[in-house]
Amino acid sequence: MTTKIALITGGYTGEAEVSFKSSDFVYSQLDKNKYDVYLITITKENWYHVTDAGIKIPVRKDDFTLEIDGHIIKFDLAFILIHGSPGEDGRLQGYFDMIDLPYTTCNALTSALTMNKGYTKALLQDISSLHHSNSVMLREFDRENAKQVVEQKLKLPYFVKPNAGGSSIGMTKVKEASELQDALDKAYDAENTGKQVLVEEFIVGREFSQGIFRNSAGELIVLPATEVKTTREFFDFEAKYIPGLTEEITPADLTDEQKERSVRVLKEIYLRLDCKGMVRVDYFLESETGNMYFIEINTVPGQTAQSFIPQQVRAYGMTETGFYGELIEASLRFK
Image (cartoon, rainbow, N blue to C red; front, side, top):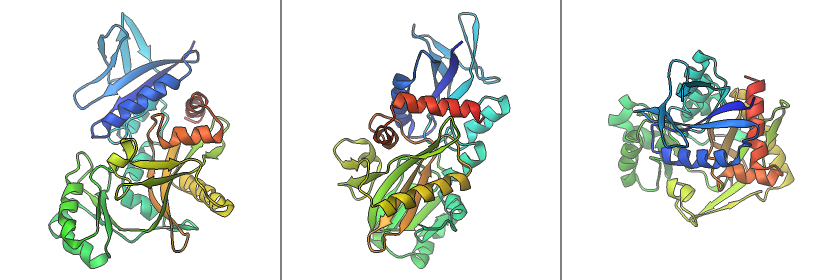
């Protein structure tokens, strides 16, 4: 019998449109001789699968099964491709833990922690060779005085972003004090991000994104890095998803020392946070010092043909089909 995979897409935030593109690509790459794949869409209103005949079948939430033509479809694994809530913040992971269904991502605790950028930085503070920009984390009750708090503790320019968001939604680079309040409001009001804001001092340097995963043999594999060069003010939502605004160089032009350092640091981050499956770490190499500055970790990174992870998989010498198969087999083995 083939392994039954629930390929889960959609979500509750503005990142849903990216999730649909990721799931379309992954579906096209999965080996259908080994895996019986069902695309499951999750929205706030419905959880469902659409059959080849165009019939919408609701997911039975008590055990995450489908009933199609009188047959019950029970899944062996959930392949989670929801960027943002509820697929990247631990909510789905907690549900799957309760019904004993393995999944491809980090566990519920790690997923929840890493969606909180401030908490993540706190956990990674003492990793050798990893630096962190000065920052302030603001909660909802700080909102009235947020501007004054930032101006007292940080120096311009700033990055202002939702503390639990993704795809740079709600993010602003602030170069002048007059821009700060609008940026704070934008971050606070970003949909389904928890009403928390992270403000960080800007680091001048080269920006990189790099994937790491555990394969079916249990080995940690660090993929080649991608350097990001954008014509935008920073790597915002438009720069990420509109062709022509960003140059992505994979593999990045790094010295042997920089490559060795990034591999060592990424493995420590993965282990420190108890990650599973594939994750992607974004970081700067500061121009003046060459120091490595942590930006964020993505536990459900984008998977379109042009996304960083597929680029890096190809640069590593794997096919996407082989890579996704490794993720599935590792998730089943180390559940």
